[in-house]
Amino acid sequence: MRNIYKSLFFIFVFISNTVYADTLDKVLQRGYLRCGVTDSGPGFSNINDKGERVGFEIDHCKTIAAAVFGELNLEYVLVTPQTAFTLLQTGGVDIFPAGATLSFLRDTQMGLDFAGVYFYDGQGFMVRKDRHVSKVRDLEEATICITQGTTLEQNLADYFGSFGIKYDLVTFSDVEKAIHAYQEDRCDAMTMQRAALAARSAGMRNREEHMILAEMISKEPQGALVRQDDPKWRDIAFWAFNARLAAEELGINQANVIKLKQSSSNAEVQRLLGIYGEFGSTLGLSNDWAYHIIRLVGNYEDIWRRNLSVVGLERGPNALWRDGGVMIALPFR
Figure 1 (cartoon, rainbow, N blue to C red):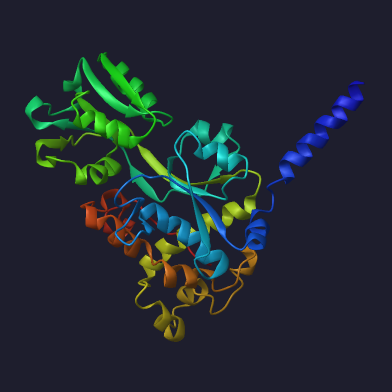
Figure 2 (cartoon, rainbow, N blue to C red):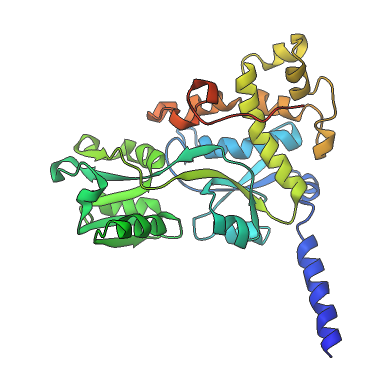
């Protein structure tokens, strides 16, 4: 009997490790990418005046679709912080590129892999100017609005606990409810990632009466998540995002990529755009996969300017290394 259970265990492990092992094949057979997105607001993910879903997060979905298909064949699956990881784990979506924070436990205990870091942020706070709060430690005995299912609560506990600061939490299932409660004066402060807080607050009524504190209490390196059982799919996501940084470093953008593919004599540009080499076939893609990303979506700067510059966000640490940031493209060679 023990041997039977042992055999069944190994069969289960084998099946569970192979169910989603060929994500690229499944996506190609389906004919479109199924991408998990959140309703995270202006600049990141929202519906524009034309009824289209747009934003920094959405362009991550388009990046993968462009790499795989050479066109934007994709479906958006709206998820929440509470459902995103489960849907990815069970195959409900092919990728979740909506800015999850890369942490030790998420990377080692959830059966998921991060495909690099494409955005650096930190947890911040919004407060009313008339409360005369100038730093985080002024929030002693404050009531703080926060969303559930993220790393925010743990960050608060760690930071406030280290200084012995007492506080009360009011938790909500989504960001809109939390912001609404903050505007209704149900809490003294609102906390979330600082960049998202800036973007979300842009449309608040009486925005000038509020301020975002300069301090951040955490590091929030964010990236796309894929299932851990498919290293080829992880490589596709990782190098697709890296291609946008490489393009910016090499001076390739959405406006000039067609011309440069025809005329550039730079060897790395030629490899990136698929003029020679087998960089696409190594991933199971066409050799001009990165060219399609830049043509259809743009380089990192194109994507930032289109989505985040318009809501007032500066590059900061997300600038290229040569411009004082931490973003550096891995070489295509």
